[in-house]
Length: 103
Image 1 (cartoon, rainbow, N blue to C red):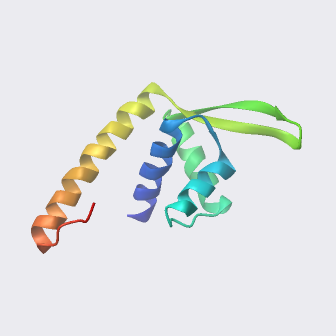
Image 2: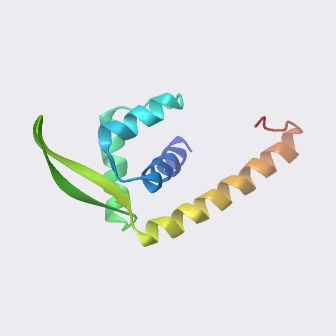
């Protein structure tokens, strides 16, 4: 379950802007989702291989070139479907438990 939620969060972060991997980790940490590179990179590779992400290389003045990730059109569609599924799951859990999510 955590893997699926992380994929959803990672796609959502990348959909907001083209982004570098360490910045993805920072955003996840800000949301209290602690992720290390050893967790992030396999997910990014899986999403890229599924055609949901793409990347481009950019030269860096402070070391090796950096990969910047963006969401493909297929990724945007998949993200929309994930959001719908998440909303349905959230509503089902609220109904089953009688506990409403605070917003």
